[in-house]
Amino acid sequence: MIRSLVVTGLLCGIAAAVTPAAAQDLGRQIARAPDGEVRVAFAARPGVYGDGRNVIAWDCGTGRCRQVQGNYSDDWDNDWRSSCDSGPVRVVLAVRGGTVTRAKVHVGGRWPAAAAGVTDLGTVSTQVATAYLLGLAGTATGEVGSAAVFAATLADSVTVWPDLLRLARSPQVVEHTRRSAVFWLGQAAGEAATRGLADLVDDSTGSREVRNAAVFALSQRPRDEGVPALIRVVRTNRDPDVRRKALFWLGQSGDPRALALFEELLIK
Image: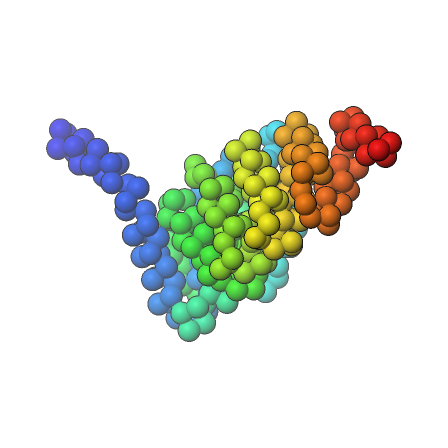
């Protein structure tokens, strides 16, 4: 028993170091899979539900559910059985020549028996899954990166917003993925992420599309976070297009502080 406890403690101590290696191993398994589809599943965070097909809801239990219908889980296969479950997250990757060419995300449901051309890697830890997915997002083209970012935000017991910020700031990441990282950053993170979004808006070296996406993400934050940040954008940002976007979203908020700003600007 003592030896068992010692071994367990050592394993816990090196878990952080093992995760990147485990993620690399998962990546190798996916790259070496025969051409076809690769299945991976992992635990969903609390408040995430799905019908196993094309409806995913998150932030349930906080007075509302936000839903995604069809964005990342379209009908390019028919291997689902409908249900309404709190997990797991199920990711299907289309692999051709060792490269992921397409990705889709579902929550809940169940897999049917694997047919020819399907490689099922089973359930992996959320740490390993998110490390792999965020790595994929950093290098993928097209919509694969966006789907990988979305899947990572659904994982249980993993903090992904620092990685989302890195993706959003990296000029090496494709624009579509960067905008997706900004959007989900605004949806999933708290005050620390709001500060990061404000930094993205102020980053004159970044593309205007990414800065505008950060403005939109700020508009989706709770009012006590988003409205003051948007007001600061209007007052201090040098890009007139970014300021116009911030004013638009302030106008949608109906917040008294936004109205006071409009009055101030109009009477100048």
